[in-house]
Length: 142
Image (tube, rainbow, N blue to C red):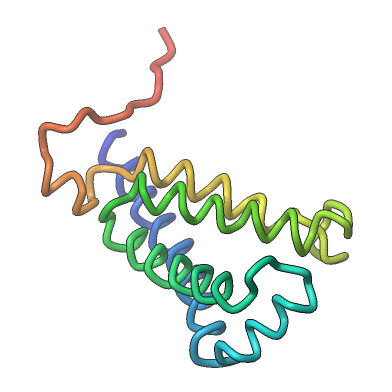
C-alpha cells in the first residue's frame, strides 16, 4: 500500500507541477511579462509588474519543485499563496464555478499544492536528501 501511495503522489506531483509550469511559462514567454503586468493592472493587482514576476517565478519554480520533490513545503505554501491571491483578486467576484470565472480552479490548485507540499511521498528529492526527516503518514483504521 505504501509504494502505491508514493507512486500516486509522484504522479499527482508531476501532473500539478506541469500545470504550474505551463502557467509560469505563459506569463514569462507566451504572453510576455509586459502583457502579464498589463493584465494585472486591469485586475487591480497591487504592484502589477513586481506581482507578475513573482507569480510567474513561483509558478514556474514551484512546478519544477513539485515534479522533483525538492523544497516541497516551501513551494507548497508559496503556490497555495499564489493561488489564494489569484482567487481573491481575480476570481472571487465571479462565484464558485471555473466555467463562470469563479474560484473553483484556483482553490483546487491551492489545496493540492499544500497537500503535496507536506505529503509528497517517498519518491521526492527532499526525502532522498534528508532520509531521517519524519514522514507524514495517513492514520490507519483500527
